[in-house]
Length: 160
Image (tube, rainbow, N blue to C red; front, side):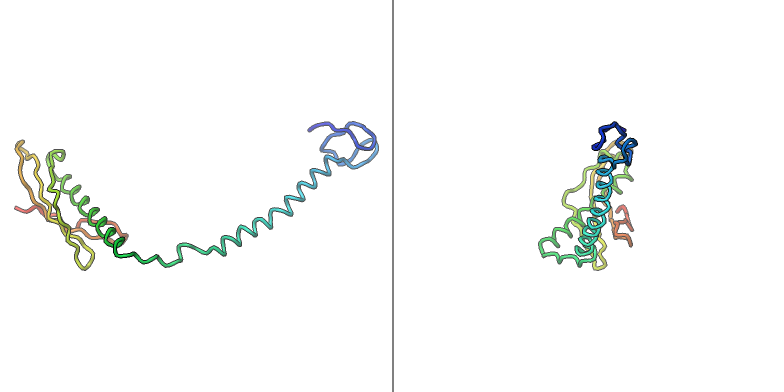
């Protein structure tokens, strides 16, 4: 709260006072504050209306149909999905080993996609056995997406 001079009589009055106590003239500081409040009230509703109108007219991008994948992108997506399936299977095999850090996987693990979208893999690796020696192992892995679209291992069998 500051003191300002009255524009009529020159007396010092509060900038929050509506009028001068000496002469009764309306305070200019009070009038300016009231004009700023009125300008906000007049300006804000149209601005909100413009924003809402813009949001409404732009539409919901989630409701638009997805763009069709071209053959190259579809092949890349399938390759990526196969790679995720291979990594899931490898992680599960590694978790079952006595010495997971010693696992050396065969890099040429082919993934075969079935009609239902499942992936089957034959994974071969060398890993340290419980006696400390390196041994070869082969696993059969069947992976399928669940209802949420997350890969799950349905079968993991070590071949003899």
